[in-house]
Image (cartoon, rainbow, N blue to C red; front, side):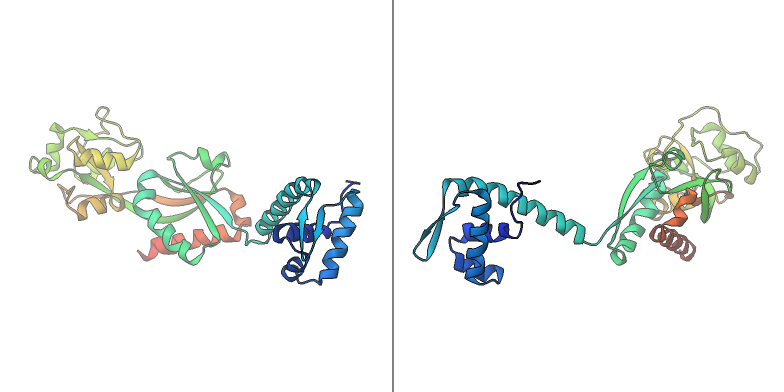
Length: 288
């Protein structure tokens, strides 16, 4: 960088070239005309050739000046952009990985509410059911359905769930007692136990081994809506479908099941903004 010109001369050169006048450049840069003239002369001496043709009350670029201006202008613009980025408030990014049904029905609206008060926090939201994204460092915080033990992760309980069958209203007309399910197609999900509900309803039956297996509870709810079968579902996820009548509960029996948790790697404790969001989520769940 031994051939760099005096850097303080470059804004003076760019302004004079843009405005076509040393006087106008002086006004824009809050300098005296003689200061502008001195800086241009210093720059020309460094480069060994004139950059301007001096005219009465105006200046015009020489061919060398036009070539040099393109480089100077680009360099000053890059410096300006880089400075603006460094001076801007830093936004912390928080990567969330939510079980699909909970993410769409419970989490998304709460994130919008939280971000109104914390615009400096940037959310990246994805969906998954396993722990892979958290254990691989691809997500900072997860919302998952499960038991109390989360090996390798910290966990905060959001709310406990109760499970019960749901189906579309037309199918409900074929059901009088829980025993009628023997003749129906039962929709399955890896984390929801029909056997547990059967016991609560007074039936001695194991989990079904056939019937459509859904890995996404939201898709299973939609399957129940179109009459694909009867779904066993967590109450918080079924609530919107029950409220608008797309699904109904054919039986009153329900039973406790797993819970929804916020889970995160231990390193999350070193991030105050992330911990504040987790605490807010837990309070939001308990106040609902």
